Length: 312
Image (cartoon, rainbow, N blue to C red; front, side):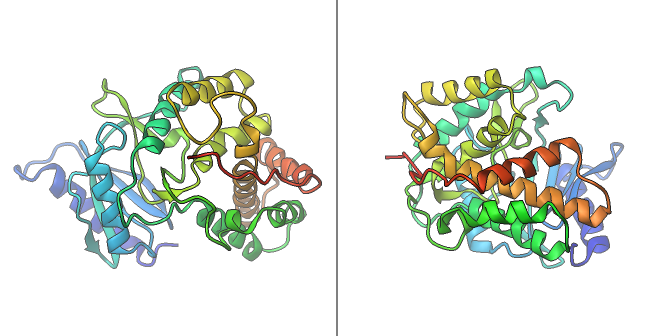
């Protein structure tokens, strides 16, 4: 839970209003809470978004990520101010509002745009001092929450699958490759258009850093492997990434030696979150949640391919 959810949300709403209407005391447009989770509280007011970052966010690391976004507005949505502010012990940043992917129109999902942005990001030289990409650490937190959630029959296959991964994928050792600029948490919810008729851009810099670029392809790869993403959409994504010169996988041939470990890690992360939520709500797993648990059960019996990355 947030440490002080009432004051934080009220304060964040006030900050968003002030940023959106800095030159006018009149405000007819109200505000909306876009997310209120332990890993981020996000409020929109008119064309301005205010985000309270996770409690463990450090000012230096967040500032380096904001500076990166400001320098590459053709890839990442740039912040309104590259310096975070403190609000009730949380670091807060301000952003222009971007139009998100429509979850009710899967046929219009911008897989090619997402792939091209990733390839461009992966080919961008990483600035000195940028922290490591936090994907493995995020997966490890999900598994830790699963262990804390209490008993559930689906927990065992998830933990078995997790245990088969190499230490770097479980955030227990350094990543084998840290020369590539990565997003760290790529999914379609991380894309917006700004302006509304403009190009797609990546958002959410909390996990951006240097690391194994195949991690950024791992979620769609995992969905494809679990049967949740149709082959045609996976092919569109992979083809677009390769055509844009993305370095995470070979330009031709089998991509799975590079993708296998990250895709398994993302499958375990997704399953761990699903089971923990089911335990907390006292409900059974739904069909999609059960499918990722079943994938973990299969993964535990087949060793992963240990060629973790292809980037050069």
